[in-house]
Image (cartoon, rainbow, N blue to C red; front, side, top):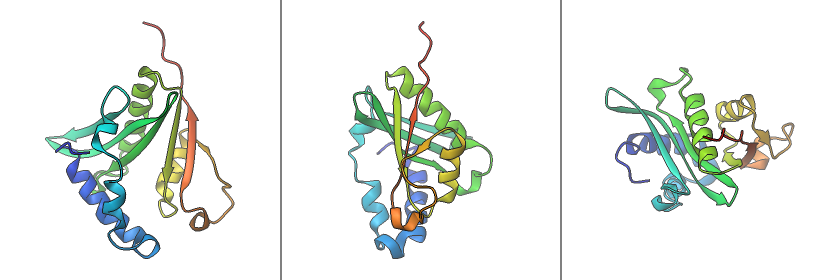
Amino acid sequence: MHDRRVRPLLDELAVEYDARYGDLFGRGAAAEELNRYPAAEFEGPGGALLVIQEDGESVAGGAFRRYNATTAEFKRIWTHSAHRRRGLARLVLAELEALAARRGYRRVFLTTGPRQPEAKHLYLSTGYDPQFDLDQDPELIRSLAFTKVLSVPPLS
């Protein structure tokens, strides 16, 4: 994702990923992960990028790309650390879901890491189905996958 509005969010995300996962995946693995997908995959018609700005500052965002013909994969749902605990991640998630449904997707697939309990809680509390045993140690699972069936948008 090369949009200048998203760069501050991704830069902070890389620092936080390294802090949380450096001993698990190795230092610098965050930058590799954040650059894993070509930016074009997050552009229309199969993808989208959402950035919330306040006073010209990017405070939260997320994106999706085509996972398969009926499923969008949500990536990089993130709130800047100075703007957390305001419901912005929920707003980003809801907007991405609505946009994905309007684009014809019927399901969402996403993953989060084992050291992001706040993300796990967000997805569970917004109707996502875990694709793993909630009683198992997240560190053993490593990649926590979730799915959700989207509501079909009304016909215009």
